[in-house]
Image 1: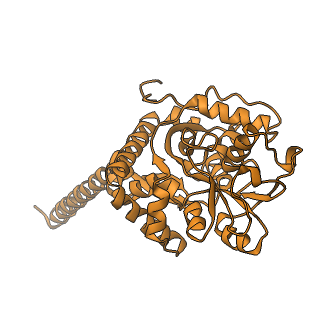
Image 2: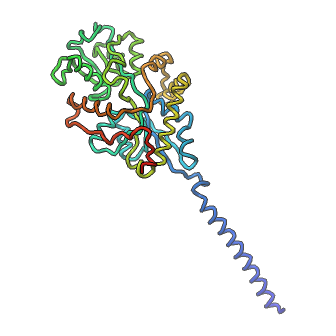
Image 3: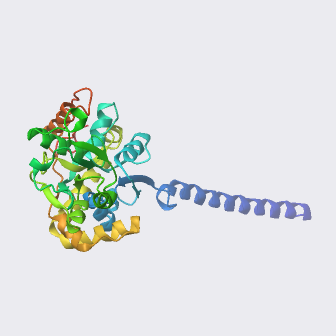
Length: 346
């Protein structure tokens, strides 16, 4: 073989090796790309919203025990967001900033009545609303209300509707609809100071603020089991959008199953659940609640996944009768029937 032929042979052999190496490297990259969805750490995010209070303990327990992560599997990443009120929560649900979460029924019903895409999947907690009077008000019973001033967290909020429905049943109406009992609104954390200053005499307040006020001298006028819808109306529900139910029904079934597991844990392990609640609230708010207050509040709050569509409708009817809602809403399709697997219903 001549010198020129040898050189050509060696160059051809080198080129063949180079092409083989490039082919091998390309094959590895292609195979790696095929598995990138699971191996690169890129996951679909599921965002759960809730509030830092004891009505939302099912969310805190699920987060602590990683029930949602366990239910969704390794290809989902769960993120949690907390909210100060129902309005902010519903805005986040409508804009897609959260996928599901826990909120009071009032904001859900109001938004649904205005065309929002929201569905109630389950209850989370019920009870906990108490009417208390300040120590210096002189109020001992309903007969003493007269022209005193009562406070609730918001106009037409869950606790306001419960309070005014109960009062109307007793023949008492607020000044808003022709009576003498004055009404103002404010943050429950400020009620003690307002009691002490004499600005308000009476409060329809959720736990644990009711127990806090009683510990500081307030008197219970109407307890949880006496006030309208006191033990039957959920004060917190698990919700999502109709769009998520339609597009990711299996995920919604997993969400509901994890929530049921969380509620079961709370009822089977109340002391540990209380500790999780106290620690979680402190982590978010930088305020540690007194364990004795939480224990007292716990006696008035029930954790349950049950939600009665008829009670939801009756509550809405009361809101309309009290003139909080201009039109009487219909909630036939708001609540997903209990025990329904939305995946199998598609």
